[in-house]
Image: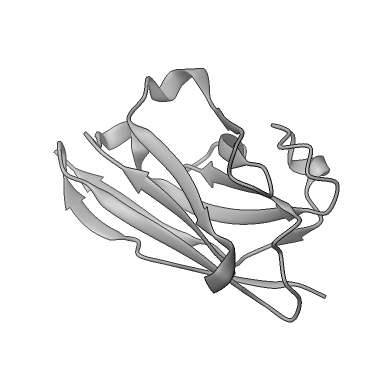
Length: 124
């Protein structure tokens, strides 16, 4: 089993930045694809970004327009999401997920393990 714990969320003003972390335990995720998703108020969970096991391939939601960067440190069993130029539309609970097949897909059904989420609130 893999346990995922997100951290780094909080309240930030529009235009600001946040760095989310996702720490894995129970089993190494060094060979797992990892993803970030978010779920805003009254919305479905949506794909944000994904990274393959080595960090050599990444994938982003088109709407993010280069504002977010996903990275990982396999030695620390941790994945990161750097978020810049935040706006109110980015307000959501952000979830980390692990994919044992390393497909870095965009669908929630493609991920085997999920964290509990961390709240990000962007004020205007």
